[in-house]
Every structure is written in structure tokens, then in C-alpha cells.
Image (cartoon, rainbow, N blue to C red; front, top):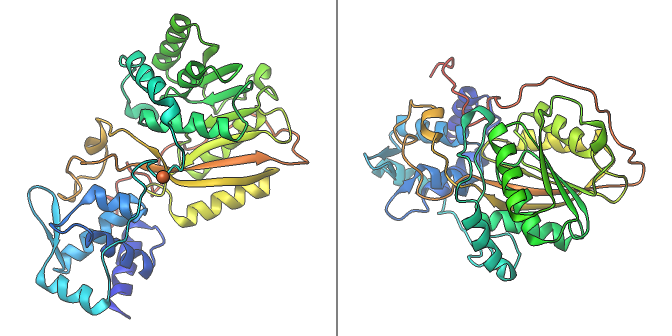
Length: 363
Ligand SMILES: [Fe+2]
């Protein structure tokens, strides 16, 4: 067995996340990107791999004397490590992200003034809390979503359902003047009240209601919307249930759903399982997957909610490292709604979740 294969095997055993030699090479490549060393969160962002896979890979490299980390959280290759990457022919990560559109491929200049207004109006928004796995996206992301839906013909003059809205997409959509009506279904009372208050103040066609997506979608919202948008929790059970609720809300063929899926909390095995579930269970096509579309503002509770066994992990991020890919799905012929029964499920924690702590595993 090669040394890389040995590292992959150790990481997989500790994380129970399928880990390939290519994954290890990729993570090492990302670690090599910084000239003065690398910051853990930047490596997670660049690698586009599950947080726990990156953490354990760095952990194993450290145990094997290939990297070391200093007080400021910088991770550097030791001389043995430098020798190793040279022999393995691993090179620093290539990264060509477009700085103008932040990889979304959308020109948002038309929204510049609106983005400023949105930021001013929502300065008093509720803070992200752990109870509902919250963490909201940047204003440019919010308006990227507005622009994308508008460009695809899914927003202007249409009825939009927002399933869970700590991002305040509903208010942004209302402020854009594009949709005919926006309905928010949200579990957090603070957000329901906030969105309704702002919508009234600004005279927007936006209404929020309290809703837990484990319950059936209320009858008046079944088959009532052109478009839904959501940012689902990423256990496979939660993903399926959120898709059910979103699709139940759509009028029929040719309607669209938008949602984010990360690589930091979902491995390629989970992406595969999710995509098979989506296409096997529902009459939809996946029309778009745009990597890095959604950028999340760093949230206060990150470090206290995650593992504390690695010092290089317990450092404040220096960039908005948490990203997700934007999916767009469209209903196709044969689509006739979906079952709308109440259903319980594990929402937030699987072994790929950020807050999953692998304490029971032997090192
Ligand atoms: Fe660009």
C-alpha cells in the first residue's frame, strides 16, 4: 500500500466518510497553496471536501510528522513533509475564481443600489442560532439568487415560496418588485415576526407563517406556487423531506425549485445518494449546479459547536469559507404533486455534519 493510500484508510476509518487517495492528494494540494502556510478554513474551502475529512487528514499528516501548526493556526509542511510532497508529485492547488461575479456567473451591477438598501433595512435582523442550524448568506448571494430566478423566468410576476428564510430572500425578492407574491414558511418565531414586520413597513407582497417541515404542507399552499427556494439541512432524510414539501407546493410541469447543497457537510457519496433519490422519486430534471454560488457570513457559534480536539481547527476563519452549490430543478411531464404526509426525521446530524464530534472513535 502507498503511504497516501494508508493515510486515506486512516481518515476513512476515523470519519466513516468514504475517502480516496485523490481526496488526500487534493487536500495536500490545498495545504500547499499558501506560501506562508495554510489556514485550516481556507483549506476546507479550497478542497471542497467534508470538514471532518479535511480535519482528520491534517490530523494524520501531523501525527506522521509531515505538517506542524503554530499558535496562529497556520499549518506548514515540515522538511519531511516537503520531501514527501515532492516525491509524490503533488502541486499547489490551482484556483481561478472570477473576482467579479464570485463564481456565480451573474452581473449584479443592476442590483447595486438595492443591495445597499437591503443591507440598511435588515441591519436589525435576528442573529443566527444553533437551534435551527442557522447561518445566513451574504447580501450579494441573496441578490444572486434573485437574479438567477429572474433570469430563468421563475420570479417576475410569479408566486414564490421560501421554505425557511434566515437569509431574508423573501424581503429581497419583495424589494426587487419582481414577484407577484412571496410566502415564507419558517420554524423560528423571531424570523416570522421580523419578516412580517418589515414587509408591512416596506409595503411588500410578502407574508410569513410559522411552519415545521415535518408537518404536512398546509392545504392552501399545495399546488399554489411557480417556484420554491430553500436552504435545507443536509442529512439525506431532511433533504428528501424538504424536496417533498417544496415540490408539493408547485403548480405542475415547468415549475422550478432552488436550493443549496454543500461539499463541506456532504460527501460525494451523499451527493450521489441525493441525486439518485431526487431523480428516482420525483418527476424533475436537474438543470443547474453552480459551485460556490452561496457564500455564508461567518456565524458566532461555529467554534463552540464543533470538535475541539485539534488546535488548528479551533481558529477563527479569515474568509467566508462556508459555501454551497446552487441547484435548480425543474418539474417535467408526469409531475402531479407528491405525498404530503407528516413525517419525522433526523434534521441536522449525520457523520458529515460540522457539529458531528467523532468522540467514540479510537485514534
Ligand atoms: Fe465572472
